[in-house]
Amino acid sequence: MTDLTSLTLADAREGLTQKSFTALELTDAYLAAMERARVLNAYVLETPDRARAQARAADGAIARGEAGPLAGIPLGVKDLFATQGVRTTACSKILGDFTPPYESTVTSQLWRDGAVMLGKLNNDEFAMGSSNETSAFGPVINPWRREGSEADLVPGGSSGGSASAVAANLCLGATGTDTGGSIRQPAAFTGIVGVKPTYGRCSRWGIVAFASSLDQAGPFARTVRDSAILMRAMAGHDPKDTTSVDLPVPDFEAAVGRSVKGMKIGIPKEYRLDGMSERIEALWAEGADWLRAAGAELVEVSLPHTKYALPAYYVVAPAEASSNLARYDGVRYGARVNGRNIAEMYENTRAEGFGPEVRRRIMIGTYVLSAGYYDAYYLRAQKVRTLIKKDFEDVFAQGVHAILTPATPSAAFGIGEKGQADPVEMYLNDIFTVTVNMAGLPGIAVPAGKDGQGLPLGLQLIGRPFDEETLFALGEVVEQAAGTFTPAKWWA
Ligand code: GLN
Image (tube, rainbow, N blue to C red):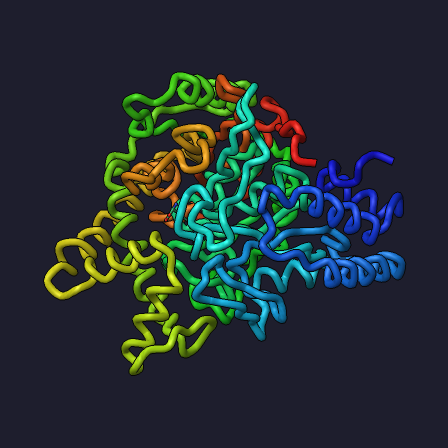
């Protein structure tokens, strides 16, 4: 039998239906692979007992002909999703051993459909970062290495554990969250597919909040089809999240393979950065050629406020974070460091519990929201955000169906290589992705090629609100042309 962990999700689903193997066999194959790959530090918690129990239940459902759409599919869950009875930490010391008495809506829908949870995946602390180096559990290692090098590379972030685990065949798919690029950037760094749905498509209930007006959950998978299959289970209206939208959930998988003939695809001229690598520039042009060959029409478009997106994001996101993280005070959740009085207890707990990047965000956020600076920073950033959104609306009003850009300005970099002296160097990773969160739009990152050192690079497609289907159709065209990307296995 072929290695069960190298199947796609769609093939595994077929194999389970045909009874070529059982859900328990598939789950055991993944649990064994996880054990051999602990050096990657992708999982912060493995849940083998629960996984086997869910797999047995899936086998029972398959035998009775009552299988859900994800019956027996082993998945990993970013540690930002609350999982009932299973430790959830957001990879922060401040949550300690917090074990939620409830399940996030998105994960509950995955289990409803029969999926199996293999464990919780590493991420940047409170999802703040682009390299997974801010996690209290230590960095995640990218399964990809530069040709001829043994240097450890970052998988991107903040959903670095999810990306690394999917790329290294340590789960069939994973959940992620994307506030400024945390699904699309790590997907690009690890040669897999990542989808950031339209704001409101997936419920945020039960997901540790970072910046509530930007946060969205989405899937990681090894193919466009697999990501579409997962999206269908994750999406849907939830009365417990007032920002979740009451729209029917389309059969996203049916959009894979749909013709893109006659679609108008925008190439935004403002994304052509000074000093951008020639390889990325070339890949972008190649992507445009692939879409053109599939019958799409490519047009140059303008998103004039693009250059303000990153600075505005780094006002809005920390502002919301400072408010969301006020609840970690040593009283309600997780860790507590005592003091002589309650104020000192709060201070000690927060000083001990939060890592440096989270503390930086809280300070920035508190500053931009404070009396006297609110108008100059926060209010102005909100106005910029409106202009960014309007840029996209204007382009879509010209009949453009989707926009093609690079996913990241570079390939994966080395651990400890970026952002040490200047945090802004790290923030620049999100230059192509934050605009999408600011505008609330859907985006997909699809692996499209390799750089000169053999590392994967991705392209991003940005869609109209609630038109993820077009992104799956276009993403598959890129995938068909570029193929899929598998790292050489050095860790087991
Ligand atoms: N890298 C960005 C940040 O640090 C985005 C993170 C995310 O999308 N969660 O804020």
